[in-house]
Length: 329
Image (tube, rainbow, N blue to C red; front, side, top):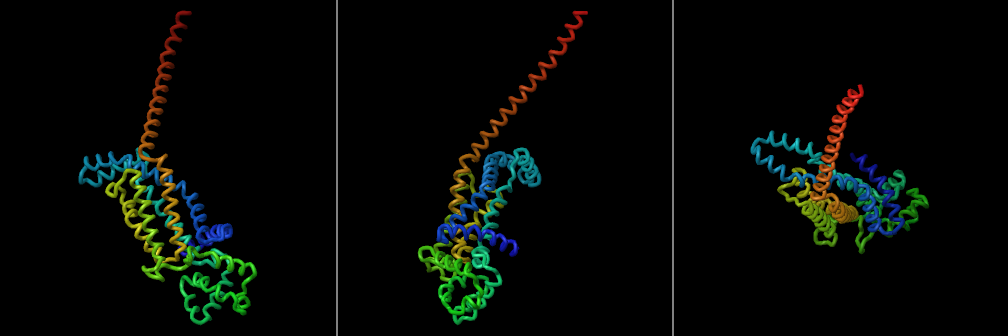
């Protein structure tokens, strides 16, 4: 899976890098990047909203089935399956689309985790030489070990950029140096290094705002979406209920443990997701879908009635034609 996510991160890196070149700010580039990803997720979000609205529309019938068959769980599940099939509703349809943002988040994580290879797209052999050079330096060299070695290298790049042997030892090209110089100037937001992890500074640091905002936006988005559909925690499907409760806490924990840039992406994604949810809900809420189904039902009945009248006219006209022929004889 690491290879898959790293490949996704490598592709995402091009989008993030060109957005960064356009605006010169890592924070704004992440916003542009998030909007682009959300555009591609929009059809899935519509599907998820349809599934949720459909479940809310059938809630009364679900309760009637549960009351009718009581403790006979097998019969309840059988009747619910028939109901979902008849109404063309997938009760787990929203679960898959809920997991897609997590999948994309992992791609973003690999983009930010490896800024030299996946964002700047510097050759891996050159990056290895850069890290080896940095590890040979006193004090800062020890920070380049581990999974965040490339991020930590960017943190010290400005300090070692002027070393006389830096370019000769690493084999960096003029294009590579230009990318590094540009990137080193713009990955801060209000003075905060977006490549730093909140966990490195503790809960008393201003960095704690990133996990807090992740929790607030994640919980708020889920709560508002649920309320718009007239649902409650008690009435949710099992997986949706679990996601509602765990996602905000998990987002806060992840935001605390990873670079702030990833938390910023998640915050953006939650806010944009809420906006698109409000827009989609206007067209795909339970009331609108019920009205649409009723309109389709009436149209179908009218079509069937018209077909029946046509058949009756054909059948009644045939005997008349035969009688006319007999009279002529």
